[in-house]
Image 1 (cartoon, rainbow over the protein chains, first blue to last red):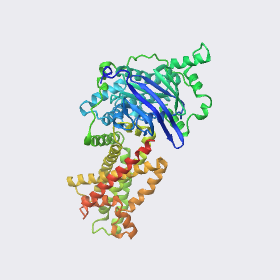
Image 2: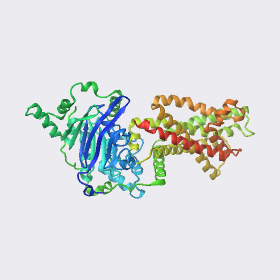
Image 3: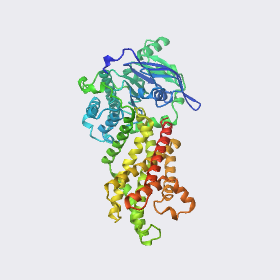
Image 4: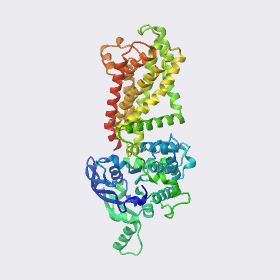
Length: 280
Length: 286
């Protein structure tokens, strides 16, 4: 399907009253969220805000015990396989297989998305070219740099022509040059394909620069929603200042104090540090 | 917060050209019905073979233990003649048991592998593809089987070099491969089932160590069931490794075996293992 053939202004994601609890902890506590088709949407918040749990519900990894999640009008609780066929997913961890070459890594995802043998090689070539990894395709992934591995994971996600690309902390642990490279490729592919991108990140400045709209999550709920400029201007108006605050200022304003004490449990922090360590 | 990359929001010079990504705009046609399962099994087996092609270290190091069993235990007990084998040399008698043991040792580590894949994000990424959980587990079970067959080939060669009189009938060898695949499918699923219960690599390693030796010694791999005490005979009767060894012994060295029963038990055990591991896979994804 070409971007032009897709329905304009359709909802890529619609979450209504989504709740998910781990024991007595409400990880997601009544999430209402709509992402339009073709948007680059940023889901922001500290560790433990509920971003990853929300994404796991959207990607069908977790059930939807309360509320509703729809992806391109498919119910994520009832119609999981249809939802999965629309998704490209890059988790926070470095998930490329180090023991396989770049090409083999992408081939695996071509196979599990039912790409026919006839067009598999050409499609894998195009996915690798889209992230500028053609020359490194025959090398084992364990020889790649952190930025190259992220681009390889992007190629794995792109090979099935997803309508919705979900990236969980795609630039965590990368140096500024590699982060720029990853975002350039995300943007280039988005512009060429018209796909919707849902991204979570800790980097408010990155979200400010690259996202069309952002949602600031805290304690399982969306505390602010809009374009980065709208949110920053809104805070400036409330404060009555001429200086435009940063997105981080907006986040501190809506989340209140005590962020440092609540930013994720041991497991969240360990996972984040492990990823950053492997990338670096 | 670190500084944002200072990049304009434009397409880079080396970005994909529109003409070069036409296939990435078209979703592949989904496989439907029965064709989905063999496709996923094929994908998982291909990955296993690709990894072995790039790094054969595991194949070589895993060959050491069965070689030592055959070389030391096999040759020594052949001289002692302490174990009733029905007139065949003890090393010939135990060779099929060692093949089954080395295959089981490979398969039993698949639970640790799946926990590693969960920690690395690989499992979640696969679970977000249009692959039913049962197909993913079946794929991994057969991948364990493929790896075990390659290991079995190595052990067969070692056994032949030590003078074990094995069959070279290609049909029988094909049946040996099928039995090894089924046995490994069961043991890998047993391991992945335990992984789905304990959820941690450390706990699974402890349990893995605790069950492999009892499974091995509680089978007919080293001695006939008839010489076991009653309670061990009961263990052996419910131990799928015994049926695997019995089938391999019949096929490889031509002794009397219960081929249909062995095949049936292994098939049912593998199916039950796949069902159990699939039902617990969701716990690993959380």
